[in-house]
Image (tube, rainbow, N blue to C red; front, side, top):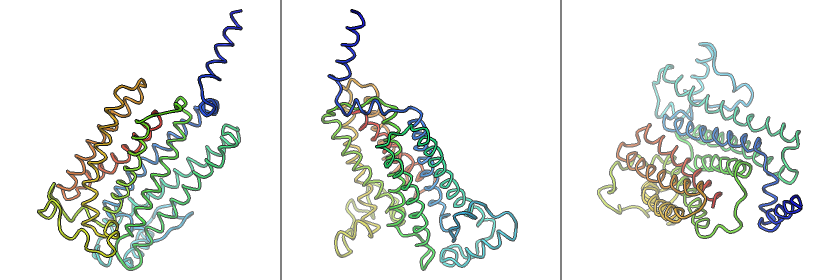
Length: 358
């Protein structure tokens, strides 16, 4: 009799209280796959942070060729370094900005870009090899194979976008296209988001069927964060952060002149450094308001993870806005600007967690 009652209780728990989607998700979870994807997510996070340093130190155009195989080996002799330096001296950046640079300074920016590319390749292998292993072990359900292969293709696409970005600064101007730089940043964000979301699907309990207002609010937060991070890419690509080092005033005005000088009007939000800088600094306060509302709503939630995630999102948002203001006041000091980018990505990760838990 006891066993019959136990079976009935288990049947009611699984089949009557769980939705079909949550039941399927629970049975498709694999902690080993989840831990692998979580590690990949953290590595992508570090790659984005490193990429920010490469950009801030103006190292991205130091290697003027893309050699997929031989490019994994750095210069090993003086003659090798001289050959690389000679190639760099033919680039627009050397001729217009770094003319007269000595080989010692060149080695620094070369190493920054080299290791960024090297770790990008290593990250790709860190995804590909375990994926092959998990496919061989049938740890990934057949209906999810295309999803994981798609993530692998995103890695390839990200490398292509990265090279096209670098190539745009090797032709006639000493800087990369701000559009391609932003696409490269968004590509990294897409990779991070898909890997982290997949990791959470293996490591966290199934989602509730109806998340309510807090789920809708966290979804809106993710959208606004992606827009703000994209705007940050435009600011970086246009060097718009350097045009004003005062806050809250900009050019001694709260709303400066010249924000809509370009025609058609919408192009100002992409190509006008003043407009891009202005909207980026104030749009962050909308994100702060959304984060605060989400924290307030999350305080009454039963899930401890959801309460902590909404609190973390608010704290990170406050830190992020503070770093943004300090970045402006410091005329884009490298350390502060790098932290500003790092916290932005951490905030994106936190918002994904809040959405997943809601």
